[in-house]
Image (cartoon, rainbow, N blue to C red; front, side, top):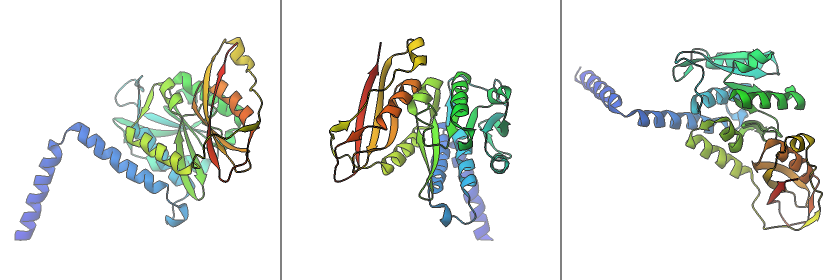
Length: 292
């Protein structure tokens, strides 16, 4: 009995301590707990008993909903639902995502899931997950619509961030990785927690080849000025980061800054560039200004 009483007192004291914590500390604690979960998500799927790729991606989407804030707060009232829309893909993922968020909320907003078919479906969603099967043309249309609607748009295709997407989820070597397009987030007025951005930065760094120093270009071509950009008098500088193979060919491209339309044009051009051979893969920087 004395032990039971002592435990009860301890629990009451703990409750009092928890109630006395500041909201900021509680938020930090919540974010830290979520980040621990996200780190676990990047472990090998085969090591997690019964956890599928779909379940891990669904968990990411739920946590992105909790960790994102919008400059233009929506839905309009404090208890309105926050909808996660799924573009293309199979029904199995939609069902898994619906089970993942069932009964959960982001702040005071209950979370629900919608299959996006029409423009009205799209405009009703605060988060949009574009499946790889959506195709290039539809993906670009969703990204453009999401930008005007202020939605957080997430994809799972290698070129998604170059096309103006905000967060990308990719399966690499048995792990779900994620990367962030900070420029796209800023343009949409969406903020992610600093802890989440730091985790994304660590993920990106872990995949980067070590820089070997500037390598000389052997073959290159200038990007074409997109007709849409020319008609809109769109100008500006695009900043790219290239992973270059040992033989000098470009392995992949990351957009560090610049308008998505201009970045896409430059990205297509540099994929055909060729550098001098080197002992190891390297990271090279490219800056190019589009102007008439």
